[in-house]
Length: 79
Image 1 (cartoon, rainbow, N blue to C red):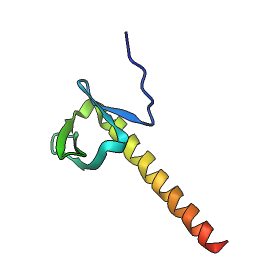
Image 2: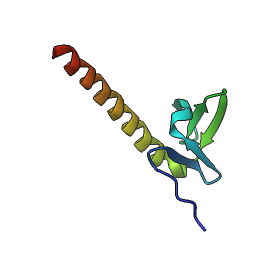
Image 3: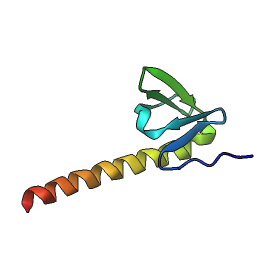
Image 4: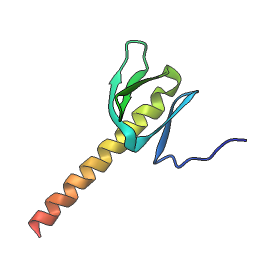
């Protein structure tokens, strides 16, 4: 039976690894085509090429959230 996790809070980076988004510190491209993901505590995990699209979607989502937060802060300063 498959466990359902909130896709906004967790991302599968490998068939054997699911990471909590709020624990991710850095994401770097790896020469293999996957990524190296560093999480809090200094642990580094490698994502496989199979999950590259999911990691990229995560990065876009995080970038969009950061841009929205910046825009809200700027609007607050104007008002």
